[in-house]
Image (cartoon, rainbow, N blue to C red; front, side):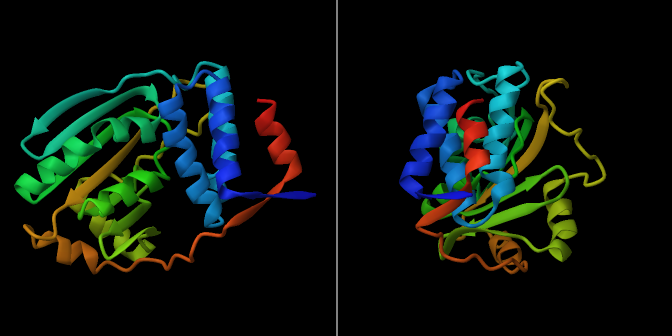
Length: 236
């Protein structure tokens, strides 16, 4: 059986479940936004399935909902952000305005994320960075990537043939697989990369912007959700 929810109701549900699990409201809203964006585009692995996984990781102490990221500039246009085993979306949101400011000044800026929850979504950060007039690219440690730009602000996947070239540009080692998240395993410790580039000051935008990407359908206004999955999330 399934139950259809509006995107607004789904975001409220996700936010409520996260706050009841001890996640600060601002962090819960940030994470819920990514959950809803994924579900609206039919990406359940980064939607409610990811939410259920993270709720269980919080319960067993493997994901720290109140973690405050540690930010270290490692070069004039590079930031290293240690999420301290917290949410990737929250860590990026904490520093995103600084990253876009660096990109405006120097043409581009790169963030290296460490010790975070799975950063494969980050729909909100991509969309917000594109709204700030930047080309935005996110990449995980396995090489999967998403992109958004001022003229195409909806995050879209970078197709597989382009990932090796993008990985070289960002310095990503694609042969390093991260262990699966487990309530009985180590604290979350994923890595990720996030690039912001100003199309007005760097030609790199034209190179990256021409990489092949998948098409993105408009988000559905309502999402049909399995009732058993909803029950697991509500009771987690």
